[in-house]
Amino acid sequence: MKIWSYHLPTRVHFGEGALEKLEEILKGYGDTRRVLVISGSHHIKASGLEERLTGIIRKVRKEPTFYTKVPPEPTVDAVEDALAFAKSVWPHIVVGVGGGSPLDVAKVVAMMLTNGGRAASLVGVYEPFKRDGIPYIAVPTTSGSGSEVTPYAVLIDPSVPRKAPIVSRRSFAVHALIDPALTLSCPPALTARTGVDALSHCIEAFLSRRATPLTDLTAREGARLVFQYLPEAIKNGEDTRAREKMALASLMGGISISGAGAGLIHQLGHGLAVLNGMSHGESMALFMVPVLEFYGEAAGEKLEELAFQAEVDPPQFLDWLRGWLASMDLPVSLAQVNYDPSWKEQIAELVLSRKSIMEVLPLVPTKEDLLEILDKMADTG
Image 1 (cartoon, rainbow, N blue to C red):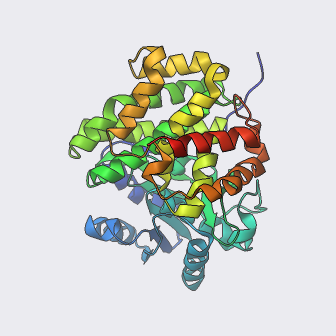
Image 2 (cartoon, helix red, strand yellow; image 1 turned 135 degrees about the vertical axis):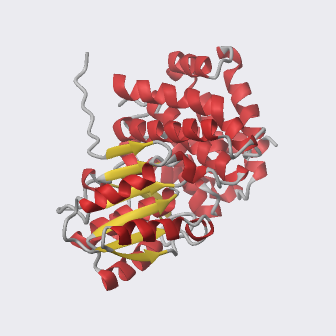
């Protein structure tokens, strides 16, 4: 048996009402005063979350400041803008609130406040930081990214273009407050996109060559929860049980990729997203079945296990999965998205440039394999 290790320094607080733990956590930071909350622009205001956070922070006699300009997909410019604002405040604590984009931006800002540098020079770099960052607390309001328990911050650099993670064990959140009640207001389309993102994490970690007994447990159970509860969460957003189970699936997906990494679904999705601007969740849905078809026998036994989690006969699993994704109005063909066939060479090169990712795949593609996948997807409608 191979030796394996797992590192998760984040203290996880899970369950309805977990947000209220923020008061106790902030008290633990003693005489520190300035708390910077980084989020997107809409949800934190429309949901009343900004007012709740203000009350909690002021209750412990600290000073809240809000930066609410993070875009839906995180970019290097979004990090630089948030960082410039943060330097005008010089916070003692950073709190990221929202989906994967605000959480990723917040964790990078917390690191760059003490390490300096430019965001564009950090994209795609492993362990770029020499110092610990400002204490960072993650509060997810969607169920999908798992960013609250990962060392990854995935950013888009349009000037290259590329979409790749900054990876550092120093960038884990100190605390993650996962309150399923904060996801109740997510609309159906966002619920579907983020839920499939969680599924992509579970599947890719489960099939990874870096998978361990621990990541297999969380990935397998996370996938089962998504298959069972995502349709219910989409159908009835106020179904608290479905929301709780999807928040748990998202957490398990994040734990899984922290230990085993992501794979080809993510790399193809990133390659296309930097060119057409599609959302991350949609790109995960788009490439999920084609990549699993490419793996074929190389992932045979584990694909059978995933089929059992979905309660589907293994020979029917990929056809079922394609239909299941389509039933949630998610794209399953390049004909359904803004795709230019002239991009295929660039997408293939972007994927192949991520050499460290190739080491975890159950079957490593050649450039010809990638072009064939894209051509096949373009020909099916």
